[in-house]
Amino acid sequence: MKQHIFDPNTDYQKSLSSATTTSTSDLPLALSIGEAAKLSGVSRSTLYAEMMAGRLAWAKVGKRRLIPTEALLAWLRSATTH
Image (tube, rainbow, N blue to C red; front, side):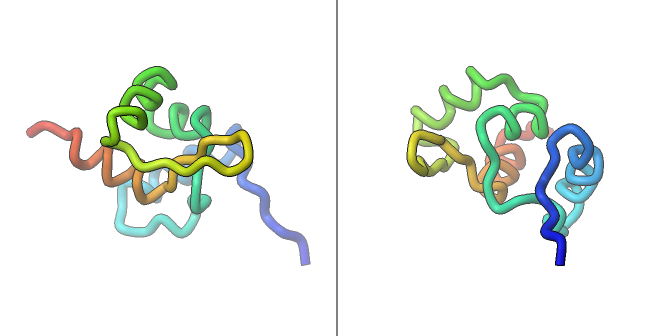
């Protein structure tokens, strides 16, 4: 059985449409900073600043910093102004 690997160059449009609905099943569990920036449209610098301020959850795995997808979506929802 072939395992699907998330390809940020081709899967973002599908993921973005999934992210705006209640289903996030097409998204990976966690995103690199670059993937999160591309998916959200927010700069890497802004993401790092929010992570360091404690407003955006993240995990360090080895040398990588990963943002749980649910944390990114919750952060984006909380940053939305009406």
